[in-house]
Amino acid sequence: MLPHSLAQFFHLRPAGPGALLTAATGAVGLSLVALVYYRRIKEAFSNPNESDSCSEASTDQTTEQVRIDVYFGSQTGTAEEFALTIQKEGKMNGFDVKVIDLQSYDVDTLDSSNSIFVTATYGEGDPTDNAKEFVEWLVHKADPDSLKGMQFAVFGLGNSQYENYNTVGKTIDSHCERLGATRIMELGLGDDDKDIQQDFEEWKEKLWRTLHAHFDVDRVKEKCKTVETEISRKDIREKEHKYKLEVVSERTAMEFPQSSSVHSLDTNPMVNMTVTCNDELNKCTDRSCRHIELALNNSGLVYETGDHVAILPDNDPHDVEELAQRLGVSLSSWIYLVDDDSSSPFPCPCTVQKALCNYVDINGMPKRSFIEHLAMKAIDSNEKRRLETIAGRDDASVYQQYICEGRRNVLDLLREFPSVKLSLHDLLESLPRLQPRFYSISSGSNTHPESAHVTAVVVDDILPEGRRFKGVCTNFLKQTKVGGSVKAFIRKTTLKLPNDTRTPVIMIGAGTGLAPLRGMC
Image 1 (cartoon, one colour):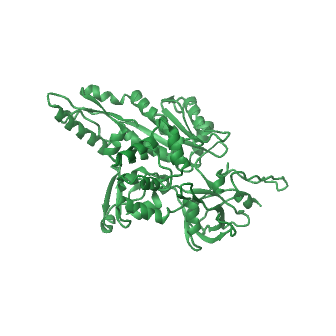
Image 2: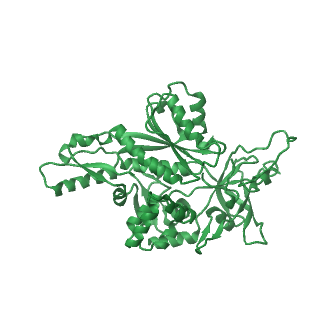
Image 3: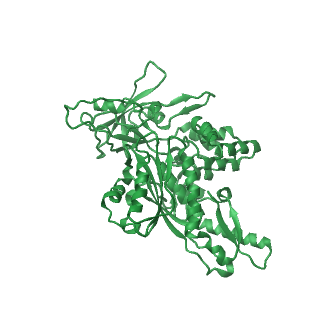
């Protein structure tokens, strides 16, 4: 299925619970109990691989963490971000969680695993590129009972506007059971036509409750005979970070080892494509539409008519500068952001400018969990209440209207809520990765085999209240001069002309614009 956002023509739009912790008790005062308890929280979160113990006098009483593998099938990055969220919260909830790209699945280990599948449906009910091989094996090649011993849960991402809504998630869920696996909880379905973030949040909260009960994660409290104290998700987020941030000099940064990024964007190769043409097509109107030609530069990439080109943009430099000023940091400062396993959400060390310009998505719609965090950081009580209302789950329409329909990003929120004291550390941990944008290639591979053409309307809208909303990638492309380069890759599609050239063809570009049709003419 082709990109469907008419407003952007050819731009493909994508698509916590608290942990129960325990403190030691004995013939000591409550103050000592609280002190020991606080230290146990710090130890648990600072090194999630260490087993909890009841007290310093009984360090031999430990509990092995339950291992959970979270597999993602993602086309535009949303499913991967959801998987990384599960990983982060999973460690806070006492689990040993590993995120795995579905293209790296291992048949030999699946049958003994605790697996969560977070998978998107793409096109006409198709799996994402990185999930195709797994789904093919699951449906057509796997032997009966080949997953006997696996325990699993599935969350699917889709759009109910399409006929094959969440087909892939449903397929994985049913075939895992068919092959002998045990379902831990019911299938979760996220609908991008409504509020997929809310769907995921609600499913995720059920997930942690189910996993705690299923694996008896709280059994250590019986061994230790401790006092039960519930730490809310907000308390955890306020006190702890998954990653440790160091702001260092350039000389010191060069001495750090290159971190291992957890994101697939840093493991899947992109190439630099040179801009050889960047022309304005709408010269008589205010609405800009660009014709851009990208040279493949002997990269070895080959496309067929009807394929997509994925372009990874830079964030607007003016927004980057304003955000850095709001956070009180220098763009030239060097940072090193890693967890206990020396993994990071993006390649480190790097400058603040590199992180804000190339790695984090500062123009996307903030998640509810991020807005909850802003509410905690607000000094003004009125601003705190407003942010809590926006993030609230009791009335989803508030978030939908203010954030989604209002097209607000993190900078908008920081402008409108000046009392929020947000740190660079908070921002880098909370924001998702900047994702590539997918465009239908508007050239034919027979006539232009060495270059891929993009024809796209530049998104630059003045909203009713006077705010300006600019599309990240179309404005990045507009500003890229001939001779400049963009990071990109080719993605195959199922939209192809019939092999027999005598076959009549009717072309309808509802929602997709003329770009793919131009390439076929």
